[in-house]
Image 1: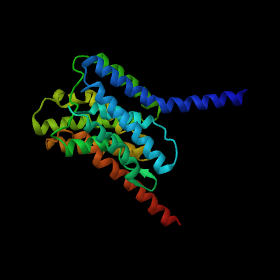
Image 2: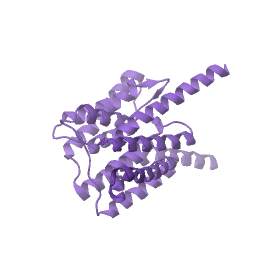
Image 3: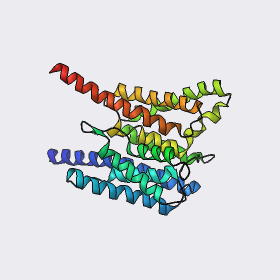
Image 4: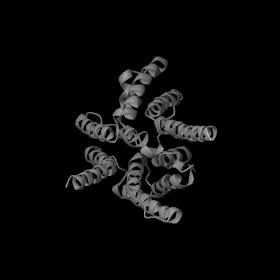
Length: 271
């Protein structure tokens, strides 16, 4: 009886870990749409989700010969559907395909280096600014929406043992915002206002904390979160509009590659 109970507890814990993130991002989607109607259109978001899921399914079968778990693709599709804005449908398809394909193509020693949605969104914003823009809406005075999502997100990250990454990034962002104010003369509250918006909530809860594309050690994760915030500050001082995406695009893969290289070098030395 005890053995069966332990087995069910283990299965339940696994289900919680797997489905916490998709449940949270669905809450962000619903909360943002109900509060602000922030989607370009529901059809385009559904197109992004469907494109992500189909690409994951096809590449998983072709590359590994397995039926892939589609939770990650669902999260990527929603992220793409929320984070980019375009009156056209093809950018949503292309961004989703690029995001998922990066997991299969840009790999080193069994690990993919970029967070999928960060890769796709960054590429589209940088290479196709004529047809694609990023989400810029903030929650404004609707604080209850932000508070609920932050509580749910923090609880989910705590359960997944990723909360320290979120905390280090947020603290670093707030500190570096003060430094930016010294250079720009901007009011501090104006400098930190973006972190209250849905774009940053997706960035914090799903991009920088992605278990598949963060370094393995707790200290390393905290240091990378600090570096992302630092590079973001530099980019913001140089008036980069989508600074957080570009900062993670540069720092995250470099940190992963260094960790993989260091592990290989250590293994060679030990051998």
